[in-house]
Image (cartoon, rainbow, N blue to C red; front, top):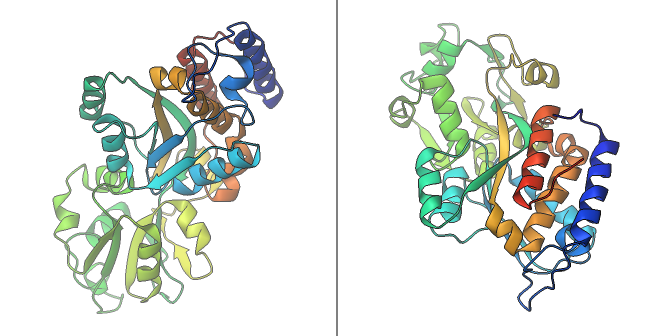
Length: 327
């Protein structure tokens, strides 16, 4: 393990460039390389060929930002970032083999790894950030600021009216807006609040599900008696009309995320495969670019940086995937 420092990372990239330069592998007409060349392996100006990513709607704003920067740095080919949910993203990566990178707001499941194996793919995990799942209501809601874990479970399951949770709250129906069941956000919330049992939340009244977090935000701000949850970035985009709810007195803040005390903080990942990365230089280039630049963008987009040790491990995984050894 090495100590994380931006200058050291740049040195590692320079070292990688020198090592890659010795490989001298010509590019084929379809943009693939038989061996790695220094520039063609990671420089956005010099790699060509399509990059296809798909998955988590939570991670979408960050991956889209990184793709935009990759283009700005000179990548002239097509790069796709589809927001379809973590589960659907893994299906596209591991079952149909249509994507090069899977974006995920949860770790890959063993069943998905098994599906990847049938395609000859071995998923490599790259930690890119941290999300604090935000439980939100409209700014017009004047009674809800903090809930216990048990109250949160009640709100998203058996309670019909707000007064069923606390007698001094309004006798008004709870209107619920939540991510779809293909979403890693849904999986994570169910795991943390309902111990992986989906039934209580799916049987609740006045429930609307959507894979589109913007749809959820619009539904929540439509009534002071609505509530929902999604990734922190979508709250950040709508904080002029929505407010977050603390859980057991803990708000989704940088301090609480860093200290691991906020109960709904979770890691964010991208996944790929070594064979894909070696065969398609723009894919390995984009992943390296993502890891190198992510901390420049992650806070502005609305997330929190990954622990430095996890980012270090992600970089080491990249080097291992392309058969390089960082100094």
